[in-house]
Amino acid sequence: MGLPGQQQQASNSMATGPWTAPPEAYQSAGGAVFKLFTAQGDMYVYIQGNSVSMTGTMPSGAQQMSMQQTTTVPSSTQPMQPMQPMQPMQQPMQPMQPMQPMQPMTMGNMQMTMNPMEMRMGNMELKMDSATPAPQPAKTRQFCSQCGTKVAPEDRFCSSCGHALS
Ligand SMILES: [Zn+2]
Image (cartoon, rainbow, N blue to C red; front, top):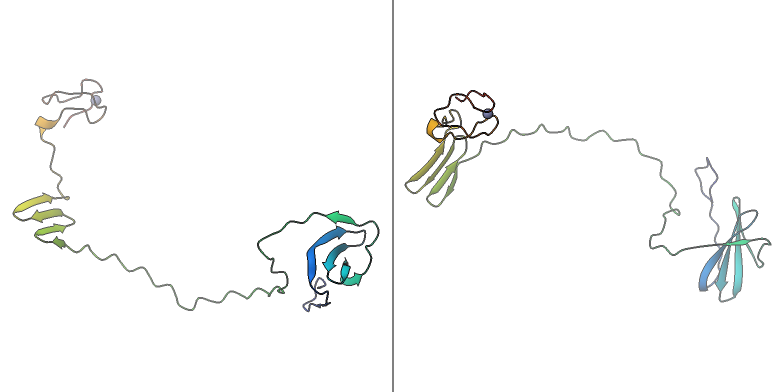
């Protein structure tokens, strides 16, 4: 039991003996009643306001409440701990370490480096200079880069959209 605004909580305990059936819950005019089926007979726990009493008779006018079995137990028996103020961070955040430059990868007789992209495998070499991208040879140009219309290699402008073909 706890009163609003009270730090301390009071608790009562009463021995009922083993229960022979799940309890039933009833709502009465002044509170709630739990009917316990014990080895000594039926008991009624009457909760009214902040008082709990055990009676041998059902208060009149009590309406049974539906109950359902749950798998989790609410932690209402634990008194709420007051929130602790946030502790200041013990350690200041470390600034992000800059990315280590990619080390050349070597695998057997294969070597690969990034930036510029370069791959060597035996006596085969594949290189891509990212700083100066190789201009597309005019011979291979077949489509307008703007609209995709097929253009002749000697065309200087796209016949469809007029895009200047460099
Ligand atoms: Zn075009």
